[in-house]
Length: 196
Image 1 (cartoon, rainbow, N blue to C red):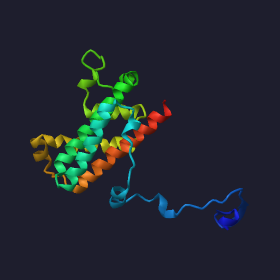
Image 2: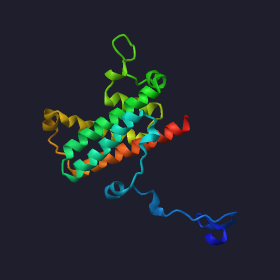
Image 3: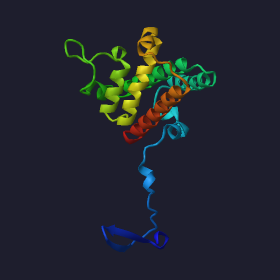
Image 4: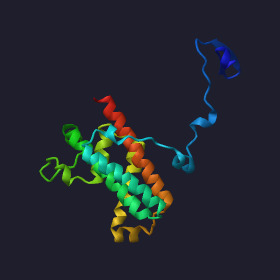
C-alpha cells in the first residue's frame, strides 16, 4: 500500500487509511535499536580535515596524525594510537578555540583563574576544551561523552595512571577512539558550515 501512496493508521483496534502525496516507506521497528559495537566500529566516516577551517599547516599535521594512528593500529601499538588520538583531538579543539575566541571565552564552562578571569587557551586542559565545545554547540552530547573517555585513555601516557586503572588499551579501544575523533571532526565541520 505504501507504494500506492497510502498510509495505514492504527489507533488501538481502529484502522484507517490516509492518501499521501508521495511514497513513504515506514522505518523498521529495529531502526531505533542501539548500534552494536561491531556495527559502530564498522561505520565509515568520510572526514575532510579542510572542513575544520584550521590553518593549512595544522591541517597537514592532523592528516599525518590520522595516518599515524592507522599505522599504529595495523602495527599493534594501541597505547601509542590512543595517545596520538587524544592529542589530535586536543589540537583540533585548540584550533577551533583560536577560530572562535570570543565564543569559547564567554562560555560558562571556560576555565578561570583565582581572580575569575578566563585562562589563556594554552592553560586549558582537554577536558576544558571538550566541555566548552559542547556548551557552544561545536560538538553534540554523544561526542562530548565519548571524548572524555578518549581523554581518560590518553592520560595513560602517564605510566602510573595506567597502573592505577589496571587497563591495557587494545585494538578495539583504539578503533573506538578513532571513531570518536572522526565523529568530532564531522560535527565540528557541520557547526562551521552553519556558522559561516
